[in-house]
Image (cartoon, rainbow, N blue to C red; front, side):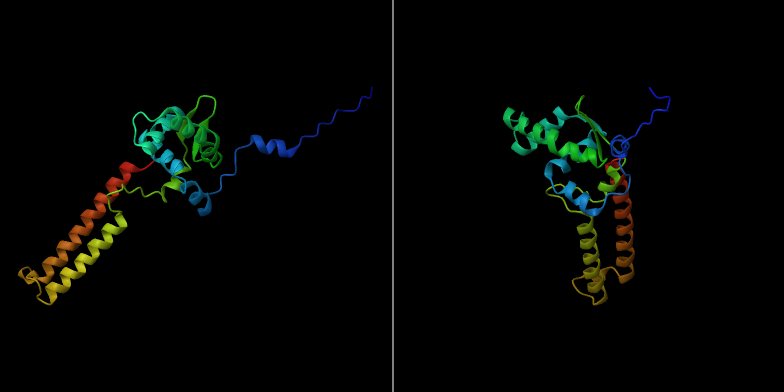
Length: 189
């Protein structure tokens, strides 16, 4: 035996596997890839509603109910949803750092990186109008009314041009305040 010190070579690639992932911002293509799938979008939305934590079983039940419009959903659909979430969608969200997915306990929690995705998730219910469409409509209505008031059309001249200007300014400000308030309630964090 030699008295030389023992040398240990550490493979750097193995160390990279145990270190936290690169915390760069998600690029738009990654975010769009996440959001183009209905089940991933619904996962993020439902986690937000559940105050950021829930089990895969509850999530599977919820998504299967949405997809089938049956409560409780058929067992085979619930199982199919569970398998696709467990094998594909949740690991993807976990790898990107958007959701923490514990595969042993089958529990999910939202991560801080979900804020990067939230910007792209203006969730508009089926029979609702987006804020962008609302503001566009309000602006178009204001233009029509102010134009009509200026030209004394459609009995709009009963109230003068200055009234309509202040009215729509106040309406825009109140709308913006309500928009800010409602978005804070829906914020993921």
